[in-house]
Structure formats: C-alpha cells, structure tokens
Image 1 (cartoon, rainbow, N blue to C red):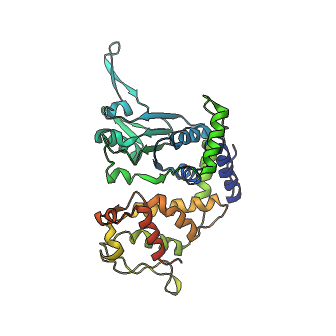
Image 2 (cartoon, one colour):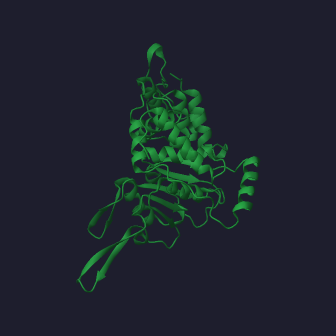
Image 3 (cartoon, one colour):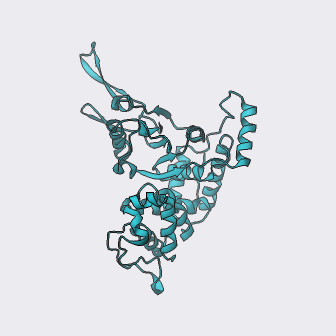
Amino acid sequence: MERPRDPFSAAELFSLCRRELAKRVAGQKEMVDGLLAALTAGGHVLLEGVPGLAKTLAVKSLAEITGLAFKRVQFTPDLLPADLTGTLIWEQGRGDFSIRRGPVFANVILADEINRAPAKVQSALLEAMEERQVTIGETSCPLPDPFFVLATQNPIEQEGTYALPEAELDRFLVKLLVPYPSPEEEIDILGRNARMGAAAGPALEAVLDAAALLGLREAANAVRSDEKIARYIVSLVSSTRPLSTRGGLSGAGGSGGAAPARLPKEGFYRHISYGASPRASIALHRLSRIFALMEGRSFVTPEDVKAAAFPVLRHRIVLSYEAEADGLDTDAVISRILALVPIP
C-alpha cells in the first residue's frame, strides 16, 4: 500500500477503509470513523454499547484491514495480570527463568468487557497503554509498534463489574458510544445474516498496512491549525472546569473562543464535579486534525473541533449528583458547552 502524499489521497484511503469495513459492519459511521481516527492518532479506544451491536466484529475487521497482529482477551473476575501480560517460567534444563509473553504482545488488543476484571488486572493494562511496555519479573519488555487497545464495556449491566478509575479512563484517547441501528440498517443486517449463515462474513482486503498508517500520521501532522483554533480548543476544555479560574483567551476582535473569566459552580455548572485535564486539549487538537484530513482538507475548522469534542470529552468529565438527578449525561453537558463557547 502506497503512502498518502496529500490530504486528498489520505481522504481516499479513509474512504477505502470505510468501504472495506462496511462489508461486515452495517452503519455505525461514528464508531467506524472514531476507530480509524484513533488508529491514525496512535490512541486507545473505549467502546460502550449493549451486547449485539457489532463492537467485537468491528474491532476484528479493523485488525484485518490493517494486517496487524490481533489478540482478544475476555476480561472476567478471575483474570490475573499474568494472564494478560505473561509470566516467568522455570526451565529445568537451563536452571533459570524464561519469559512467556501474554496476549498483550500484539498490535491490536481487544479487551472485551474490560470492567469485568478487578483493579490489579486493569492496572497491568494501564502500564501497557501508557508506557507501551510491560514488566515481567524484573524485566521491562517493549510492546509491538503500533500498539492499539480497544476496550468494550456494557453500560446497562453493572453487577459484578469494577468501574474503571479516572486515571485509566484518561488514557483512552476517545470513548465511542455504539447506538442501536436504524430500521433500515437492521433490515440490512438481517439480509446479511441470511446470506452468510454461520460464516464469519466476506473476506476483507488489507488496505491499511504499517507504511500507509505511518503516511496517514505524517499527513495529519501536516494539517494546519490556526492559533484561533488552538484558543478555541483550550476554551472548550477549560470550560469543563467549573471550580477553576479561566482567564480571558481571546482572538481578533474579542472573539476566538473566549471563555468567561469565572464560571462558579452554579446554574449549568453545578452539573459538573470535575473537568478535563490538558491531556484532553492535546487529544482534541490531534483528533480535530485527523477529522479535517478525513474530509480531504489541509486545515482545521471549528466544525472539526466540535465533531471531535464528544468522543474526546465524554469520558473525561465527571458529572455531579445533580446531573444524575436531572437526567443529564455527558453528551448533553458537552452540547451545552459547545453552545456557550463562542466560535472563532
């Protein structure tokens, strides 16, 4: 696969990836685009949706079109860190220990139902996600490059689960919500199932190898982002922090995404307990450039930032009890923030 040389060829490559994934996954445009964007950015993904919405199928298909090594780990309450990372094995003939590597040593890792495993297993995965290495005994072993973790969780079944700590949630570049299909998409799913029977589905072509993926990343790094866009991003993220003082960022003519100097924890902001960190600003800036690249543009617009705001911020905002009492979720809060912060 040839490296994309410009935004137009990069957009064509993204379209080719979408067409390949559409052979198995009906609809789910936001999930597919989010997976491709996170893969390009080199970030990890948290997928949330009820069972049966093709989360696992989408991840397997994504690994297939990249030709990367893929491993699936089913997280359960009795899972041990060694089951994920590997362990030391005593070799009688050598009189020494050797390392037996676990399933985490692959390019694409599917952590199925990640919140079913206890905290010690989640901590083992945290080191792999952040440091791109695991420690077995006294040896630190680097993970393959690229390394991409996709974790799934069921939002409606909480019995016997272990909520992910905020520190681990923040390591995911994006959180994607997988909704129910539309009636038309579900009819398409029925037709596909009737034709396929017990088969896994049509074969997919590896259209996004390591060289092409590197080319996409280089093309994304070349996408221009104006200073006003940077100020807009910082204003959006800082507006999620109701207890902090946010100074007047402003662009030309007093616009540019200025946030109020002080937003007390009252009114709308009583729904937020904790806001996003600067890691969210970095992720939002990175993802907005990739969204621009998907459209074949060499520059970022405020619409790209708005599109990236939901997957980047929805797992980084901690809502208050008032929000739960009022029936608000994080997407509603983000929509309100996007409406309040002026567009540059």
